Length: 254
Length: 120
Image (cartoon, rainbow over all chains, first blue to last red; front, side, top):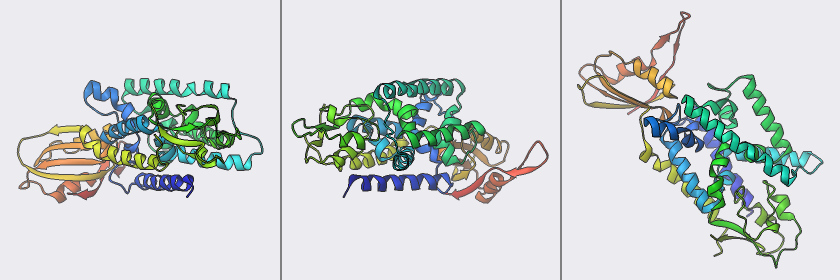
């Protein structure tokens, strides 16, 4: 079975559960599951022993689980569990099918644009800690989509943000995850240390470039031996696309 | 050491479940108010409408001065409110009625803010 079938099945179940919670059927809000809520709560917990606004214990425990997961399997959460990553990927795949041009971004520009997410992370945390309110809600596609432009969104501003993210994802795969996701920025340093990573065998590699083409984050496994890249989600698309048996494998490596 | 591909989804799912069950280690109430020391019956309600610190505060204030209610603790992210009450003065159905009562707004209209979806 192709790994993508398994990955999309898991992601579909998680997306379904998120929609179920968002429609108010579950015992808790869909927001309670977002690991970034744990980050938004840190200062409030430290200073007053209280969570910020609508965040709670589940946000904190999910954040810890995602960090531990990153230390083991890099950004597996992003590739295997995040509903926004899933939607981004689906829109990106649709874009790649429809658009005639190659949508990969110049590597230099790509890595510079990725700095935006760190700026976004610092600003989001600064204003959240200052106000005790979840100020990111109006700009957060997860909240905007699943709350149906609910309380805390910013009307036209949120519409524009969502439209930009959708068009961006259509043109550049994983547009939001690459350049804006504050959770991605949070787990970047842990992801670099991730134990389970993809390893490339130089002797078997024919430099066909299939792995690079299939990577939603434009990482080139054929140019590295150990894929330590912070953005690798261990989605395993590169392993599946590689025509050489055992050229790309998953290994435990410090 | 080479590992099978399916280790990644397995670890991811295990960590998601671990995160879900670890939440008890980080529980902090959003609001916690003690009105009196009388009564020791407990009632846990899942309340639609309690979604953040603001609504939890508002919800708690609705019980200010209600006879028989000893304490209220809310956890907004879980939509949970835990009451300690004196069963000789107030019962579960009366608590539900207070939760679901329409609230008078400034413009004169009234609206129901909270719905009790489960009581234990």
